[in-house]
Image (cartoon, rainbow, N blue to C red; front, side):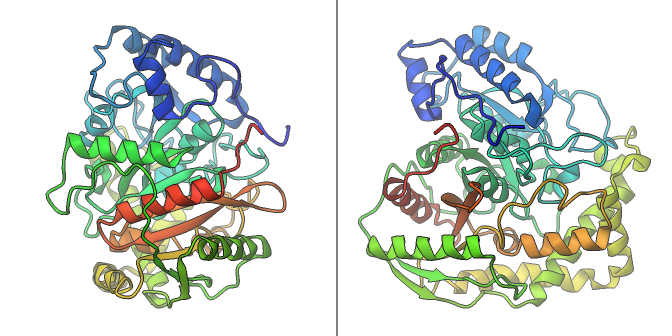
Length: 470
């Protein structure tokens, strides 16, 4: 395979981002049908990367022709994909697992309505690993979803297919969601902007209903900061939250200089690898050159957080294995569960007595997270503790204890935001010595996406993000 696989070409989509493509659609430079057909052709160019879980382009093209696109929908007619753990009428929601039923959904879930309110046109569903429980989009029973920057490497997860479709140029924006880093991890691996909003900023994911601690936030992966900002503003207009101040559209950087806390050691205590440490140092230098004050800060939580989070994570796998027929329908087949999900579920059974303490500790993390911003505006760290691994390093069919240990050490920075509910963004500010993207992670206090987006605009202008087609 070549080092890079992408679908950027001289067609109707060009290298436009979602905001640019929507503007071209509004003035008639191309039609929604032309956009859908061009995106479909680009998806075919990425077939080696396996980013699509369900192909629904026929309905997508028909919708492009027939739909009464609303003039006030900012992304009217822009082609996209929905992650295959989110109900979209006519598409089976398989959650990345052969254990789930193949029946098509009869209706959209509430977040899907919010997503579609922006005018986006869904051409299909993107891949994710089984139930989104790991950080690579690999499977025990099928080909992996590969990284377009180098197909020998992981694309991250769980929103891996979405990240590949956007980074590879098939569509400019795609749905993603995040329960432990699942927007930010693939964004980091594939060189994208990945914002996890504050808990409840957007409509709650259906799979989060009934969770004692809601870890999941919906969002998107994009190639530009403005696409993320415009999506968030448009989705917020569809259903303004009553739990925090209205955000509105963030359109550029602020003149305000920030006090930025720096965390350069993973919660596991391991050292960063050379490339990640260099990327973080270069980002600190850039922030300082821009006039921001960067100061070291301690982690908001101690190492016991690892055990609490991983136990809760194992509990979710156990719930799937034990109650799959109630959660997904009577056609659910426990015998088809993948080895990694089974391993997580067994781990929970051995330690079930820890559940009340884990839930209590994760619930308390919101206050500890909030207090971390008493003296800083933003916290900066790497998105991941080391560079993107090769396919197979996190193989879900591998020896469970080894894979689990590798995963915990890889995903060391992102889970706190899910437990605490705070917003965070991964930005593609560096590359490894092998030419793969490295993400830098910025967190802010609850409901303060504005500061993250303003800073992201400034960094994007100062250090333009690398493009796969260059």
